[in-house]
Image (cartoon, rainbow, N blue to C red; front, side):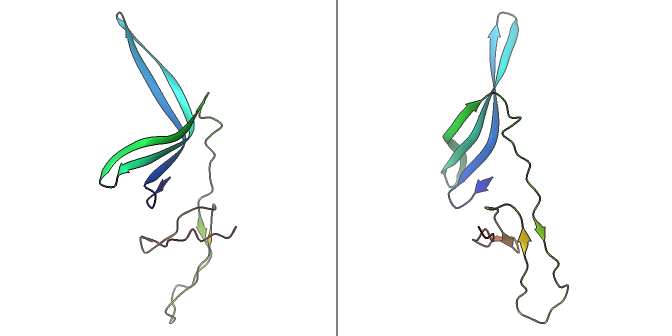
Length: 109
């Protein structure tokens, strides 16, 4: 999940593979990190540094599926200047209106 305001990325689980060459063979192992927070170092370049991460045994239990956000029924035509809609989804979801971040997650707590 990318937060453009803070230029940070939150990754629920991240797999890193090490590779080492021993003689004629190549061996490697996977290392898993959960709750990885990365921040973009400069606004113009996609280079990130790691703020926080926790080593874990696997990604199996750390990735939770979330429900897809849904809209309630909305009118197809209106004479009004504004139309109120209700979005049902996970708290913290970013709401876009006409492709622009509304600046509000839109969910009551």
